[in-house]
Image (cartoon, rainbow, N blue to C red; front, side):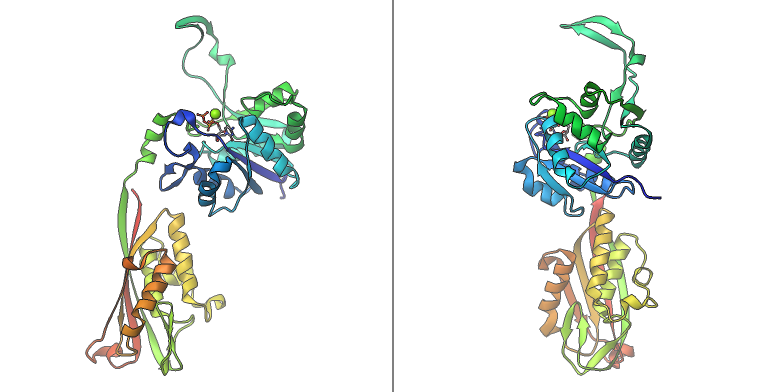
Length: 383
Ligand code: CTP
Ligand code: MG
């Protein structure tokens, strides 16, 4: 069933003064990536969200581009207040004609999928909805450092983001609002514009990173560990005019036989990387029975394994490949192979090693019937 065209508007133009020194809070490291990347992923992967617009501070363009690499979301610049940032974002979204918009703080990276579901569902009935949570502490108004009147907390609700609206309703409320008035959030603006705002169940995990202490949570300080995987592959040699080995074409009077380009070095490398991230083996990801891999460049297999690794939060840090063959001679091509493998894995060349050995004439490699390759890849990831 088709759903209303829904935009996520992520406001990330604040300076994070309360979070203390360092990068603006939305760009600080959370589990190996910027906070904003985690926020973006929550919306990017959600089936109800059709587009994402991020409102950023002009000083943060580079930080944003880095955090946005995987998502390719569009951005626009914000203003001095959150209200201005949201208003700018809505104006930028207008040409896309979304039916619904979910306005969300970049500083809430733990927004759960089912909360987004609840808000989208609420917009099927009403014009606006926000996540609300009960207050569990006692609540009083204060007079200086003294407690004044007690307040019945059952009449109160803590409101989070995303705050969800029919797009044109929120746009009109902003356009009609007096310039210069800063609303703490869109629910307040909607209320003052007479739009009824429904409360759906919020989520205690959906916290807004605000103070320096919020960055002391264990998830910000998980230890990095290193893990290794091994790979092994063999391909048969036949007559031809050259072979692909470790991503480099070597002119010689034979060919390696296989469904893809039969680059035995890269196949061992892919298996080693898949091993390090616990993702099975190359045959599961690129079955030889699948015609789309016929003649494929094995570099595409490495690219895929690297993107799987990134999604799993793992970063390759080292690779070592051993080629077992009598022919061709590997020495003259070693540097080119190192450079190519380093490039594919996003490593510097000092973190890649290529070795070669013969088998003293013994076995299939010794008789020149085929080439074997061993690889070991090391990745770093959080505990
Ligand atoms: N925000 C924004 N434009 C502003 C102010 C805030 O886009 N002019 C965004 C922030 O980036 C944040 C969200 O609104 O994602 C919630 O605001 P808040 O938690 O107050 O963040 P900051 O304003 O950055 O923090 P502080 O108030 O401590 O400076
Ligand atoms: Mg603020």
